[in-house]
Figure: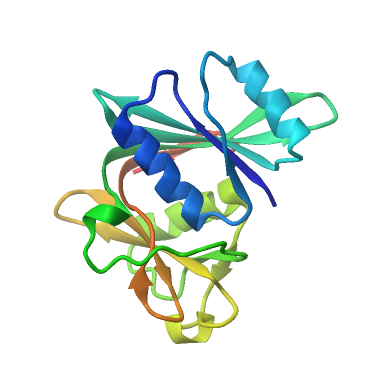
Amino acid sequence: MVYLITTSHKPSRRLRSFLKDLTSVLPNAKKINRGKKKIEDLLYDAIELKASRLIILREYKGNPAGIDVYGIDYDNEKLKPLASFHIRGVRLSRETVEAVRIYNPRILAIYAGQASHRLEEEFIDIFVKAFNVKMHLGTIEEAAGEIDVLAIPKWDNREKIIKLFFINPSTKRLGGPLIKITRVIDHEANKSIP
């Protein structure tokens, strides 16, 4: 699985930092500068790199505002919209004192062992399809040694958002951005949460 990640046109410094953070937690992620490339150009870049997913980060007023995930239809040379994640804000790894960068991860999974809210369960299903990763149903300790990065979603009832953070299960230390997600659109199922 190869991810090709880029940004919207003329990215802010913060969006470029978010791109770097997200690239660090996705296995086999390749980031490219968008420049003046149209989405069709990005499709051909993805095909050339044999990517399975194209991820485009969006911004609003200089801050990360969304993640759009596309599948690559190699037969028809088309992008297939899979999911869109609307973001209220992010905390970059450099802004988190206890965060430790995860280098060259090979396996990413999403933690489904203690989903405590219906929206967490729905989010996990969409994340699995969009990023083509497995669910980890055991404990965090059981993930150590076999999973390099564990994505953990938590529903925040007060803020009405899903907080997504990434940890190294071997050390249980944060290793990537904290993403505050307000809405997720599953383009294949034509539904959204919350």
